[in-house]
Image (tube, rainbow over all chains, first blue to last red; front, side, top):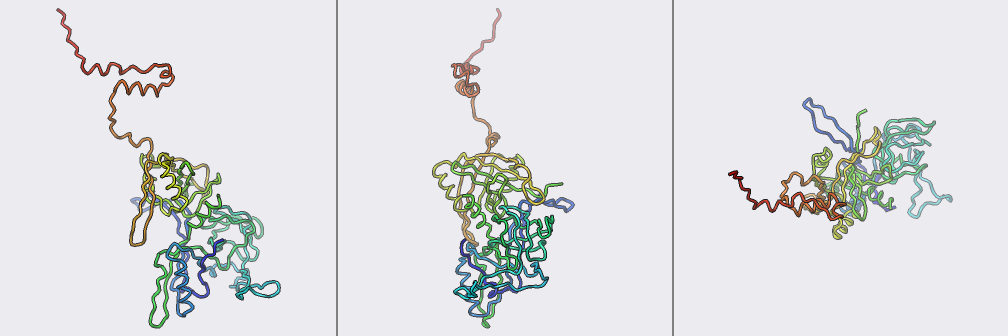
Length: 238
Length: 193
């Protein structure tokens, strides 16, 4: 898999974040009575904004510049965190820290990082093929499968109401958007800190001013990089 | 239950490859295992809709976000003069409440590519590159007044197509044989005296 630029979740923290669904609907316009009949033509895609990202130290500024240069306008791909701690289904009911594990012999990687493991553990119970809209989730260590966000290989999904409880811990739920790339059975989904592969919404989306007090904030808008998933689907087809 | 969800599909059968696009965001895998690409159709969807209602006999499709494979293929085939005449079909796929396809897609419009202009527009927000497809179907020229003249040669040629077996036997429709002669024909009013 390609190495994407990752938005530094801990360093460049937004004041608020917004993950919005953009469905495709179409209608014939309003009737005289003001009623509109609409038909959906696709579940849609994600738009994510990181509002008021505060930049106040040289490290932050350098990280900001590095991302901006790495992206090179709205064609660049970036992995954006989607704040989900509000709805994340922690088994304990409280927010739990992620787990960082060292190697077997208690050593870390060269750069002192460890293996990351989310506190929530949800698996895909059965294969989810491309463009599926209903998936089966197995809760290994989680509270619920309803109304949560998860990501797999940086494709972000949100689940709807439970359709069917297949067994004690397996649930069928609809997802938004349609599955962008097949998720194999037993795949471990990222539920703690789901991410979304995005483009900037605007070529100049990461403009940042420098004020006298050197504390600045900027809002960055992102659009899900559906073109990447389209290309990948064609590649997978051969 | 009323249909809440449909998918608008567009397939283009170039000799090299069939390109499948649909009016959505991500990729769509249909029941036959074909992948349809999203996020590529732009302008002309209103025309698609009228085409679907059976009104349009001509269609301008504009493709945006055309990816490398599609545009390369388009260029290649255009160079090789194979684009003109490629079959373009518009289909509607009814979907169930979970946006999954229900039954086969219905073909709403079939036509052939008549021309493929490409366009680059520089705007404030950047450069927009589009490939346009001018698609026509068999009703395109029906509204024009035909300039054809009823002549013997035409009629023989037509009969050779309509009745090839007779043509093979050397027989042609001789209906207009004497048409040319009629131009100068004088009919004399009979005098019964």
